Amino acid sequence: MTSSIAITVDVHAEDRPADISRAAAWLAERGIPATFFVPSALFEHASFRPHIIRLPSLGFEVGSHGHQHDYIEIRALMRGAGADLDFLWRSHALYQDTFGSAPISFRSPAWCPLGPSAIAELVELGYRVDSSATPQRLPIFSSTPYANTWLFARRTPYELAPGLLEVPTSCLLLPAASPTWLTLRRRVSSAFLRLLLWEARRRADRVPCVQLHVSDFVPDASPPPLEEALGLRSFLPRRDGGLRFKVFLRERNPERVYAITLGIIESLRGEPGARFVLLRDLSGSALCHSD
Ligand SMILES: [Zn+2]
Image (cartoon, rainbow, N blue to C red):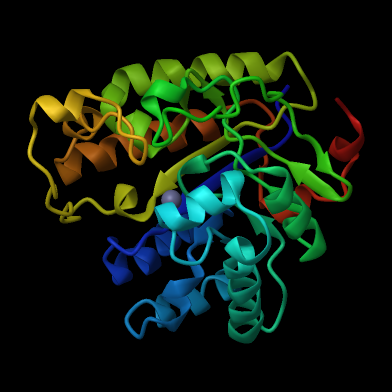
């Protein structure tokens, strides 16, 4: 039986700010707690700020999704040290100023792998949960195709460093996440999720952790325009961004995206014994000591 399921919602600068509140209201109406990962630069953004600061009062956790969520930060998290990682401190201070408490959970932009210096800084800053891992994800389909995308990471929550629990985003070649749902469409996404849930049921310590975007909850969302054209170069993996043709495969009709989201949430709610948790609730649990 599956004990805990974590729903995470990643927020980005391309989102419509009001969609944050709409996604939150949608989840709150159904009594579903979730962890929103937000780049801290948005805390200072006048149109985003009001939608973000009310999330905790609705029962949601706000985790850190980096500061700017860009390739400078991604490279720093993977390979940087010292001053490269100063943004983590800035982001932490900004969070503290905004919410009056310290962030507990962290997710790297694009689930990029974390180098030893980044992990050490997260521990020093007092983060207790990291959800950057995507075990067995194929690097070629990621945004960092030449990096090890947690290919050999464990599929179960584990202690990444003393006091820092890694709660991997569920993954099997592709992450259990919005880009995958939009690529596979409703029926195949549900089958993919059922496979992951079936796997989780065999291990009491496995925590299905899925990711969505705020626009996935909004049936009249307006998808951001594609900033690029499909061309031959789209089929060559870029060091920053990976294979770009994949973005052209994704569902862009907001009503169909919403239907996919409904299917995902229904599958999760139908899971026997399912209990939705915030990622911070998992810190300090027995999971820290299992393999
Ligand atoms: Zn992101």
